[in-house]
Image 1 (cartoon, rainbow, N blue to C red):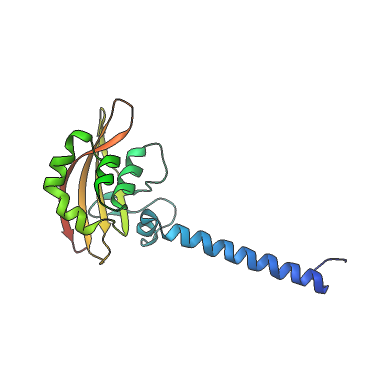
Image 2: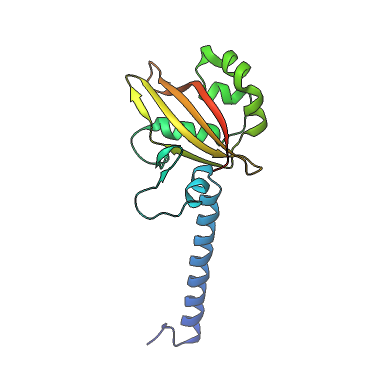
Length: 168
């Protein structure tokens, strides 16, 4: 059979294709593992439905679904902290108060290396979410955050209700 694997040129083509596939998988897995949400999910032993965490409840894949509030929180706590962080994620009227109360903690700990978001509760225009996050030193924190929907329909952070260092 001309060009098949039994000829030298067919074997080289097969080897090149195999190598390309292996490198493609490697690049995809490295890209996936660089995402803090993905690192949080990869750390868990699960198949199919995401597991329940004993502290934050049912874990949600913040990258999927119809609620962009989940992805905003995961993105915010997986991002570098600075003035742009407030502009991008926090309600404009609350920059000073959130910075005053939580600024030192956020400056020291962000970006978290892994972020897991639990299923939240919502009311009209508000979303309350539990988080479990791991900082660069491997310290685990439990956070509770509240988002509000703006007139434009976007979610913004309006409160960080609690921050607790966890042993779990």
